[in-house]
Amino acid sequence: MLYTLFKNLLFRPVIKFLYGARVENEANIPATGGVILASNHLDAGDTVVLPAMVKRPVTFPAKAELFAGNRGPFSKLVAWFLKAVGQVPLDRSGGRASLDGLGPVLAVLADGGCVGIYPEGTRSPDGRLYKGKTGVARMALAAQVPVVPVAMKNSQVTRKAGLPWIDHPVVVIGKPLDFSEFYGRGDDPRVLRWVTDQVMAAIHDLSGQTYIEAYGTSVKSGSLTSTEADARILERPGINTRPPEPPATS
Image 1 (cartoon, rainbow, N blue to C red):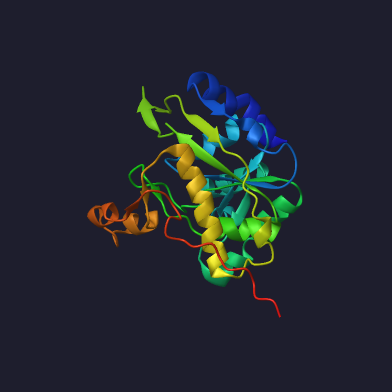
Image 2: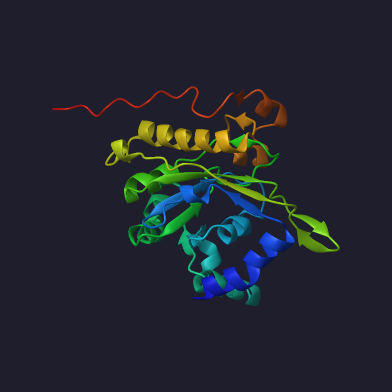
């Protein structure tokens, strides 16, 4: 209820009419049933523009610690808001904890909901597209739902008269990707990488961004310099990835 209220009375009017946002090919999003929207991540504006501009309610997994509300009054307000608008927690600590932490997300998909995710795992440090993490593949294969690639354009947040401003953002929706041939193989690292790279390749084709075969987090942390990142430019994601072999039959 609050999600619809905030979206239709506040966020959508501002983003569509004030910021001049538009969405292309929204019909590619299935009208019903569980689906994952996998998008590039240019800036903080993505998390507002995308759900505001598409008709279906979108659930974004948020950092699990944001739901605790144990860091003062503002954190309590954030926790209340996230819960009120139907967002779900996601453990991003890695390993088995993150895998087990997919439960709330998978529940949304099992109920026929629409989940949004940024496979890069972080905002792009320089506007280029970076290597996707395999969480999107784990979700798609575990929930057995299609993945719809999304490209955000012009979604960078600036300031105008002291207020946050996004200049004519565009949401481009691609055709659904069907990975049903890999259902039941979500524990195979080769399958997870292949599926993830296919998702990233579809996002790349929509966005036209330069692709870097490295994680964006490595650039942000300083473990990979901008010069080293330049040396990892590829024509598109997955160009060096082979399709996984069919499972062995006994």
